[in-house]
Length: 391
Figure 1 (cartoon, rainbow, N blue to C red):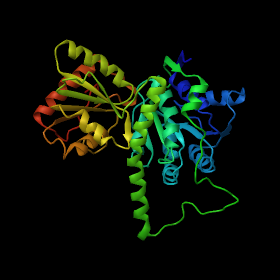
Figure 2: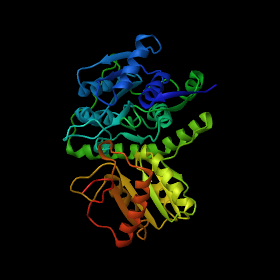
Figure 3: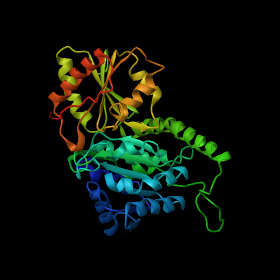
């Protein structure tokens, strides 16, 4: 029987890794993800989790250790944030290129300078092209569910790719919310033991990640891209199986009050919860608006996007990162590109806010909808539109 408990987001991530019965944890502490690996260290120390816990000397070493452990056939987990995430950046490409299903939670945090510890998606967006599956959780229940399901589809023989689960630093990682935890037997029936079909074997030595010439490199990268794109089919299937078993269904883009909505607001992460209240208010006032929550960032959910906006006149995209010197935020850029051939008639607006953990109120999300409509009506511009920034 499932049980409802109060957990901070970091502990929800750790619980999912524990119930997944991970074999190896290699991590280095950095705020605001430290509670995740501290909790897992407690589980290992008190015998609740039988795993090798590796306190390495840096995040680069953490991901390098995950590389070796996963390649040897161990179910492997780590966590990081911000500047530490950048330190392991080099190795991210090797883990995905070697088709190793490491699962990592990233407690998203703004990057310096200025030095800070609070959350936005400046770190997450730099991983767009690393070849990892990237998921964004909007609440603590989704953190638990995405970590658990991430092991399942990352380790699928048709996928074999690493998975990042993004959670907002402090506003999820350190906030306590109700989380439904399944019984261990239920998890075991959903998540089989990890078996990598090409695991490293000292009795059968082989070369991996060898030097490659220009005449073959592009073919390998093309194959990697195809594999990442095709993983979406498995992700959708696993989420359906997850929902059938645990009663919570997810999709790459979730809609909220989108029936008959001519204006749609797209958000990502925990601020989507605040945006829902703003959408409720707008609906109560008779406005035909709805909310789209983007859960799957890579592989990009093209078909789900087309379906979600098919009846909309205006799409307002809210970003929590600035693409410096570019057209605003990273997500609005991708959305425009994805819809270029499909919906040239739709009007766009992109706004950036919530940087470095700055709170946005329900009233400000109502303002985002209003300003977004104005921006869309006058036509897109290359001027960065922001919300909640003084001056």
